[in-house]
Image 1 (cartoon, rainbow, N blue to C red):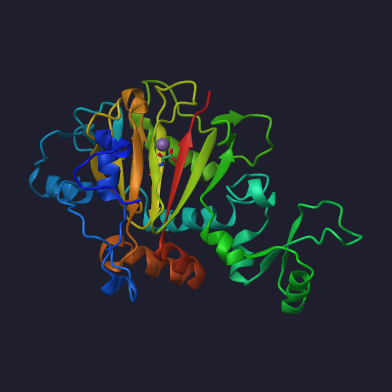
Image 2 (image 1 turned 90 degrees about the vertical axis):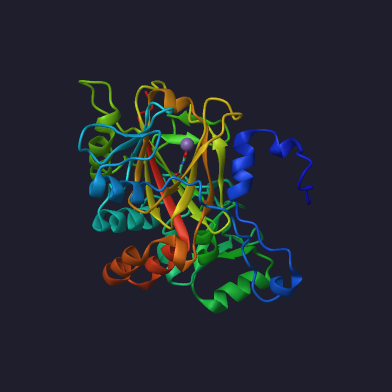
Length: 351
Ligand code: OGA
Ligand code: MN
């Protein structure tokens, strides 16, 4: 398990892997602490691009760090000189928009026929969010029961007596709140099949909501070929808890790479790595905050990228305003979820 610090093994082979390892959450090995409270290993964050402070400085005195440009004069959209096709729009979404899409991501986007990571084990699960809020438990239908038609049918129960009975009969069960915690992705519009890493157009799906399409179109415009309009056809929603990461990858299953992927960040702050066309190219590391939008088009579509870290501690998560707005307008449960989570919605034109 433990790799020696100075002998690089396979996992350390590329610059991208080394950056992932550098920023990933590790805990102190010191047993003195680990018994009581696991302490995260400190990491040097000084090399990170912080587009929030880049924006503040740009407004204040018009200066930009080396290698950073603005996309158009006066527009608060930033580019990185050696990564053409990559655009960073700090604070693109209002607090109200952030709240709306967080709620949608939890309540509606995981609803069947949209698929989630839970489909493979439990089949379609309806009303996961409300069930978690109501402390329900998902119970496997009793295979011995006469009414059992499908041995892999699961149903939510809230009556403790019923749950206990089913457990005594040997039925498997899992709480809705644990399933919500373990929700890692859902897909909107054209369904992306993770096992085949391709879009399966035969799968039934709900359309991407109009308001989300509009939002994506508005922000995509700056990265679009002149005279063309972005057509949102599929979206992947990623859910991150503390310690969850998204490994370095390319999104190469869409037909036309001149069209951007529009990627919205919600909830806790994260570190995003934008590499080059080879994993040997050292990646740019930057913060992604709630409300930031990133576009990847053209050459940037061929660049490896990933999320090695999210921050859930009060000092680094940077969601104070979001949290109070959320608990004011949609209650404690959503606010509690987002306090320790990040959601990413990335919207794609598939054809
Ligand atoms: C993806 C992706 C980035 C993010 O889902 O393909 O790159 O910010 N997500 O979570
Ligand atoms: Mn991606």
